[in-house]
Amino acid sequence: MSAQKAIVAVILFLFRVLVVLLVIMGIFRLGEYAYAYGYSIVSDAAMEPAPGRDIGVVLTDDMDTKEVAELLERRGLIEDQMIFRIQLKINKLEEDMKPGNYVLNTSMTPEEIMLALSGEAEEEEE
Image 1 (cartoon, rainbow, N blue to C red):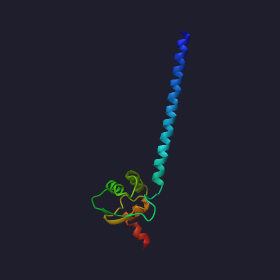
Image 2: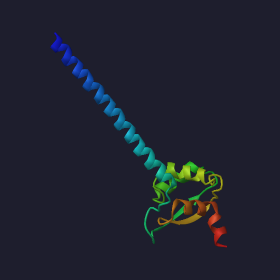
Image 3: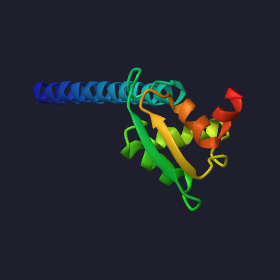
Image 4: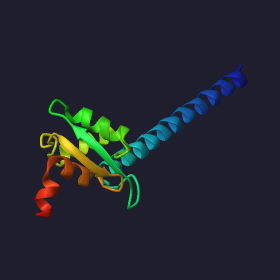
């Protein structure tokens, strides 16, 4: 019987080690995901290198930031609409987007797109 108890003890020990390793791997993966997501929020990368492609976008009065971000993602101007919405909030531009017709380029960074849609890009040029 003592041999049987020893085998059970070894199996339980190995099971505990396996659980600890799985928890450590999960924490590591979660950290990788959080870092990548956070980096994508603060990075300012365009979808394509210059010269890119010009794409027309129409914003209407009744569009909210979610609809605008979804439109930009569908048109290939931004990579992830959720990240763009967070960037809008961080830059305090979510309420500043103006309705109108815009010609945006796939080589524009998310910040350049935000400034263009809020009318601030025109003010900077003047």
